[in-house]
Length: 482
Image 1 (tube, helix red, strand yellow):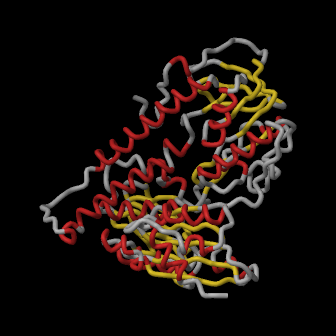
Image 2 (tube, helix red, strand yellow):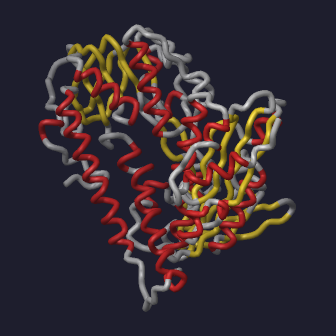
Image 3 (cartoon, helix red, strand yellow):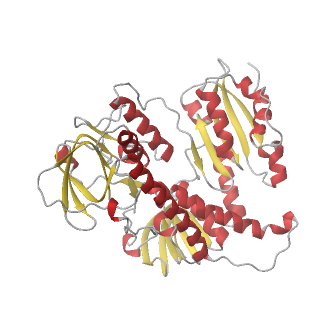
């Protein structure tokens, strides 16, 4: 099987050097095999188009290899560990138990290997040619590929789709790069439990992995430059996350700026930080850098292809995901789209429709998200903060998760659900849930929003008892009348 980071792929998927400077012509050349680009390649390949897909390392992109799915795999192992610690609550006695991080990693790797095999099979079935190597543009719609197994190939496409993604940013803090910090990639490959993990950043990656490592047994400190976790969300959401970290034993150092770093991650590190007027030293064994992402657009010759970048280094695209170069599109993270796999897939649909001569745009689409802490944070549509900033009048309904009776059977009553309904009509403007199964519950509300149903359609629905989705009935029953 193919271990993460290994490129020992079957020879049929690794191209040999053609020893020619003449470009091989394709209908479509796809750079990157992430969510949006692989979907394009498979779709057009099945239509009989000649498609070449160039992938540098991770077949299927970051999601199945080093990001979404592996992280949720590790997070679930951590949840099982938390159940062990709570076992008496469920009437189950236990003796001392220990976490075997090598086994945790092995479970994750087995899942990744299976997903890579599925992707290889899909490429083969679609007829799209998968080329393993590092590519750079040498001219309009023309790329030179340094093959993984040696040699060079040159390809040219009538159409080119770029989906090179992003990578974790290492901030320009004195000593931080030299400390060799973990990113999410290395954190998901740990074969031991960090004694004391210092997490730089209280966003998605930081909070998800902070909680997981705490549940495995690490001492964890989260360092956040803002005064609130998830500071763009409503205050009640931020407060709930603070309370969660407190109850899990995660130390929060807020409104904090890191001045310098000493030492080596995985051994011993010291952070000199400032909070207000005071300086202090934070000590730990490991650093996790989780402060943001950077597009993978440097050094691939985009300027030679006529593809312009934004000030932040993302590829400039219009609402149809066309770049500044004719017949060249960009999808996913590198195009500045919201950094979610489901948005990458929708980018595929936008490009697919436009290539077929139809008109589909990215503007106005819903962007749901879920932070996979335990419990989850999920939102779609407007928050209260956004509605107030835009001057949109709304009616608010809010209930504790305990009002959803299914949570009581699970002993998972932490959190709340709330919905914003327009004051002018009965349409749902937004939904937020912080609680068990929040992402799954949100999907039901999102469908109602997509269909532009009045909130009463959800309120009056006959939903199965006892399920988590049933909690939407008391929630929407709490909407104030007009």
